[in-house]
Image (spheres, rainbow, N blue to C red):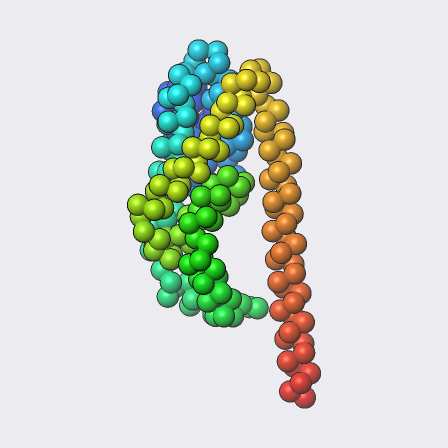
Length: 206
């Protein structure tokens, strides 16, 4: 049995708590599709298999629990380790880390809140929050609020669509591909610009 089938069976067996566990796992392992699990929870609620409010509460609790693990992972890594890793990476400069820290210091709260509603980033954003030691109460509140909005939207979509709940995953899959595409473009731009800078520096030293 693959992981997706196992998680789906978990939800069907345990009901709303199983949905919460599924979303906690999705936070830790982003390839697991919350775009499938959340609408499925909504569909199950529409069929009387679980309480709708309980599904929203449990999945939001699962989101916070999974995010908290990643927050502590970031805190464990710490600023010094991140800088040491960046220093050893090709094309990376400590100034890149400094700019990221400055940006997170200014926009960290909004990033954590809105990041909970962006595919892929809703898991990853917890790590820099931990690295930067965002105050835990603020992190938990913003994570819970953003997760509540995201989870409620997808659960209600599954509830309303009924047996067509899988359409949510299809449309959200398009959004995920767009996000991945933008990330690839951004990484490519960074690599090309950094190689260009290196080439100019090499020519100037000749």
